[in-house]
Length: 130
Image 1 (cartoon, rainbow, N blue to C red):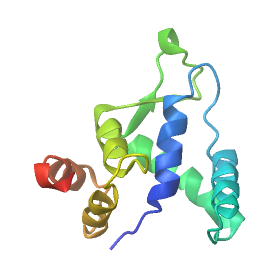
Image 2: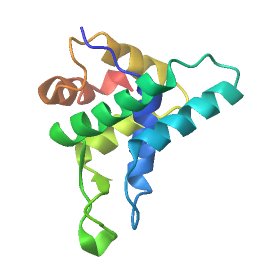
Image 3: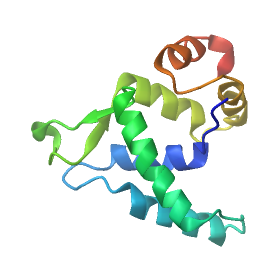
Image 4: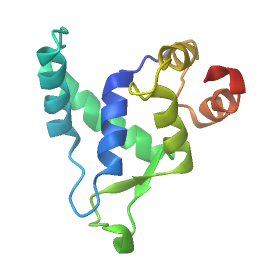
């Protein structure tokens, strides 16, 4: 069973939304994520490992259709992205600013691989997940 760091994925997806005109850089986002968690008093994992995971998540999100290269007319630089419809659905499910996001994360965690395209599309289509 594959487990994901939903907080880090959420951070990366928010950064994708805000990446118009500048490069998407997952390693610094992982550093910022760790610093924020530390400031909130939460334990953080090994920073080098977190940076590596952030880079792996970027590749995974791109390969599985959660993000796509940002078009030039939308501020694309060749090194930044936009959220796809699937990526927007994922963000809406795991967004920590939305009350009750723990249940969707729990449902996703129960899947063999929650970010597998077919698995995610099936789970996300169920109204009771939200």
